[in-house]
Image 1 (tube, one colour):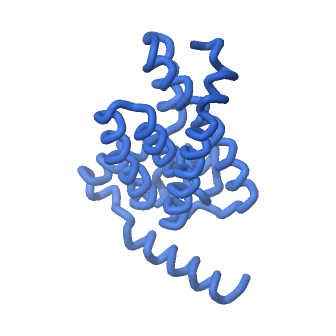
Image 2 (cartoon, one colour):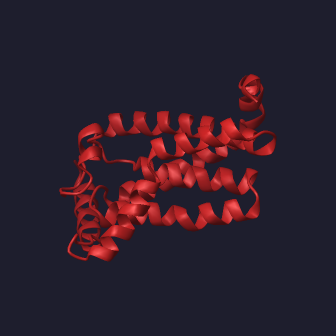
Amino acid sequence: MKHWKIRLLKWDARISKALHISDKNTFAALVLKFFAHSGDSWFWLAGLFIVWLVTSGAWRERALFIGVGLAVMAVAVTLLKFSIRRPRPNGDWGQIYRITDPHSFPSGHAARSAALAVMGIAVGPPWFATTLVLWSPWVGISRVALSVHYLSDVVAGWIVGAVMGLVALALQPLILQIFGFLL
């Protein structure tokens, strides 16, 4: 690895370690864990499925579109993670993530939150878009503060998620045409 890459990775590790919040700070750790888990894929896919199941019209279409957009984004993130294979930072919290997904770069939670914010701005009512835009940074920050990601993992995740959200929006008519039978 080139010298500048090593220096960059060391700087990233130092900054990420400085942003770590100890479990001893129980209130802060509890809030961060809430935000960290609020970006879990199962949570969003289950929520979107429930919205799709119990609504009709615009919300049903939004749930379908956002769900497909998140699925496509997840494939892109998984391909990147297994291509790059950067190990997660050392830490005690988040064992489920460390076991099921040992690769850190890019952050899937950060990508998911950014993709949701981008899609939410485009297809949701203002309250929905505002909520997602305010929530998204906290998901990424929590992942670094709890030491399950480096800062660069989160920044890259936000970029990948925003780009994939824009790709989903560009493909929205096609997505709704292909999956229209579910509406």
